[in-house]
Amino acid sequence: MTMAAMMSMRVCSPVLVRGAIKATPERNDPCRFQTSSYLPAPGVAGSGGNVRGFPSFLPKEIEDIKDPFARRLARRIERVPVENESSGGFIMSSCVRPSAVQSSCPPVVLLHCFDSSCLEWRCAYPLLEEADLEVWAVDVLGWGFSDLEMRPSCGVSAKRNHLYQFWKSHVRRPMVLVGPSLGASTAIDFTINHPEAVAKLVLINASVYTEGLGNLATLPEAMAYAGVSILKSLPLRLYANMMAFHEISVSTRYDWTNVGRLHCLLPWWKESMVSFMKSGGYNVVDQITQVKHDVLIVYAEHDKIVPKKLQVRLHCELPKAIIRQVPDCGHLLHVEKPRAVTKLIAGFASGACIS
Image 1: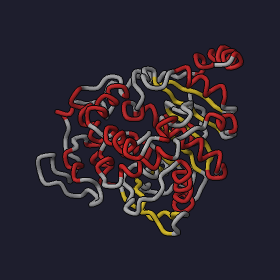
Image 2: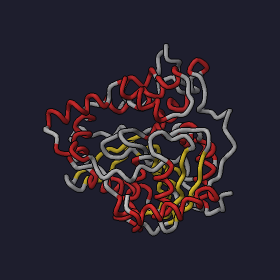
Image 3: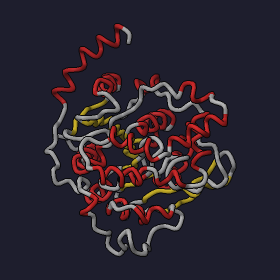
């Protein structure tokens, strides 16, 4: 780190302490439960019965998921046509679309973390709708449950273009773009290239200071595919969930791991991941200071993946940012603390003062 960066950190750090809002701990949060206490979603049989109502394009393993919030949101996932500029055709792209279109606030578009899906928002999505927001949960190209049978490019520029075409065809208004973890890099990259499509940004436990994928981008194809195969393995995903959450039971961690890797079971997942790797990954470090939009930075008290000092640095480098802390949770705070996240997003989207 340069001397100038160190001085910037020293000057800006006190702002974090003064600006951080510690919401009331959600001891009874709907997503903090034991799997033994799960109840099936209305109209859906339990994991041992015949399950109906899920979209046919989801992997059959969705039937084994116990989390009732994941089951409910999964039933709402649909595929909508999004133009693919490189081929001139369309990609049937997975998302959860709003139950009603609102006009008083800008639409809220939810991205997800690296190699994940819209099911990340299973707990917060219904709460955001209850807050009378127009909410879209979008699967980033190459991840989630879109139909990629034609094996389109899924590199950084392809992901950006796909999101723009999705916005242009379906959202159609400047949006509050929400990016958790690596989704924050996706959001910044998109905002710099399409500022007219964005009203405000929300960055949650933002992972924005990794400068691409390094040597992974130049791996021989056989090694790249071998590495990707390991990436979807259950042991590695369980370990990642140990890092991502603060305090959850072993049974819940196992079920949430299965939710998080569900999209990996689609036949084109490996090719999509290798395509992303070969593109070099996200490198938005030099773009951060160019963001001119209002930004809400939300970070977790116990994030074991992105250190707090990087959230402070981000706050210092974004010219129009505010920062808020959510206590008693880990990296995936929108799963652990959906009520706190909903309150922050709703207040920011409506232009209300967050206090």
